[in-house]
Image 1 (spheres, rainbow, N blue to C red):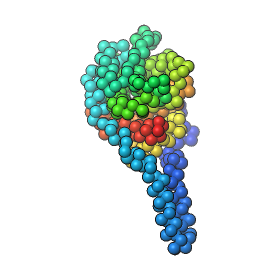
Image 2: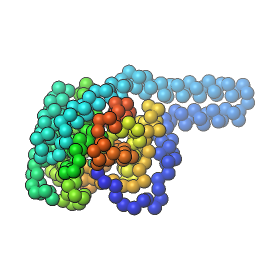
Image 3: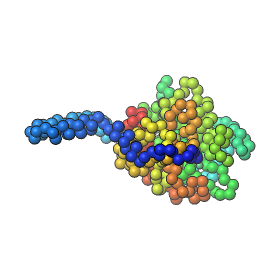
Image 4: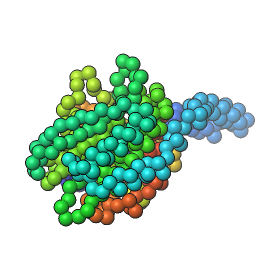
Length: 343
Ligand SMILES: [Zn+2]
C-alpha cells in the first residue's frame, strides 16, 4: 500500500471520532441523561421518583441488548494466539512474492485452514503483465456452504503476497502475514456461527504489492481483478480490508478517506471493548486493496496500522508482531460485525 495526497487541508481532529461516537449512544442513555437533568430542577421528593423512573427506564432500555450481547460475545472467541500461530507458519515459508513456489505453499496452507473451519474455497487465477513480465496471480475466495439462495453481503479481505525485493530477504510478518493470520482466525470463529458466516465472503488477494510504483497497471493486481469481475448479481454492501495489523506497538490508523459511517462504527466497537486508544485516523488517504472496491461502489474500509517503522524492510519479521495486537483488531472487527454491521 501507499499513502497518497497532500496532508489534508483540514486534518481530521482526534476528537472527531469521539463526537461521532456520541451520535451512536444508545437512546436510553440520552434519555437517562435528559431525565436526570430534569430531575435536578425538580423538587427533592419529585426528584427521587423521577430518578428511580429514569434508572428503571435506562436499565430496561439497555438491558435487552446487553443481555443478548452477554450471551453471545463472539468477539471473546477470537484467539490472538491462534492468529499469531498462522502468521508464524506463513513467515516460516520465507519470502512469498507472487508467482513463487513459496506463495503456492502459503495458498495450500490458507486453503487447508479454511476448509478445516468449514469454508468452501475457490481459486480465482489470472495472468497479468507486470514491470517484470507476465506473472500468474491467484485470489482465494471463501464462502460458507449451506447459504441457500442468500448471497454474502459483506467482504473481509487481506493480501497474502509479500513484496518482491532483490536486495533484502523480506518475509512480511506484518505486511502480508498479520492480516492473513487474522483473517484465518476470523474464519474459524465466524464459521462457528453459520448465520453470520452466511453473510460474509472472505477474500485473500494476491499481488497487492507494486513492483515499481502504484499505478493503473502496477500493484493491487488481485483486488483490481476481483473488482472488475464481480458479476452484476454480486454487489456487496461493504467490506473491511485488514492490512498490517500485528505491530506490537499497535496504532490502527484509518485512512482519511475511510467511509465515515464505517469508521464511526469501528471506533464505537473499539470504545465498547475499552480498546479505543489503539484506533485513530491517518491524516492522509491510502491506496490499498480497498481502493478498487470503493471505485466500484462497495464501501470498504482499510483497517491498517501504517505507523510501522519496519515497513518494507528486512526488519518486518515475526519478532515485531504480537498475539495481543492481533487479538485487539480481531475482537474489534467481530464486535463491529456482530453488533453493528451484520446484526
Ligand atoms: Zn507492502
